[in-house]
Length: 169
Image 1 (cartoon, rainbow, N blue to C red):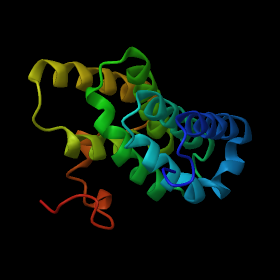
Image 2: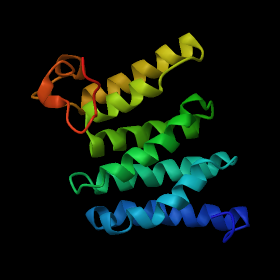
Image 3: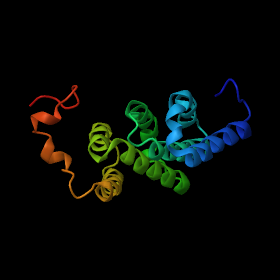
């Protein structure tokens, strides 16, 4: 995105267009996810807060639209770029971050999301970390249906250990 769109306004317009596009096309977005992943990666690594905020909004709409279509690999990949924004202090970016995490919870499921998050939560300010953990935990709890098992109960279940997602005990 840096080579094609040098002007900040052009980048912002492109990201807003992607956000609205994925919001309105819903499940048809599965055809475009892999094409726009690199654009969203670049926006999430940008210094400009507005670009990261808008990219998070696009990821939220994309994740909700492709739930159940087998695009989990792209969603986990984008989660790795969304996650570093957890320590931002701008209220708009914090809200966009939480929205994208909630969208990714829908796309990946609370268990997979919890596994990914727990691997990333390390170091940092303890008070801030506990606050963020609580916010994300509450989002996941509200997303989990009554029949779902919490991740702690299923970790020891050998049926869950598929394709190396959990280490052997």
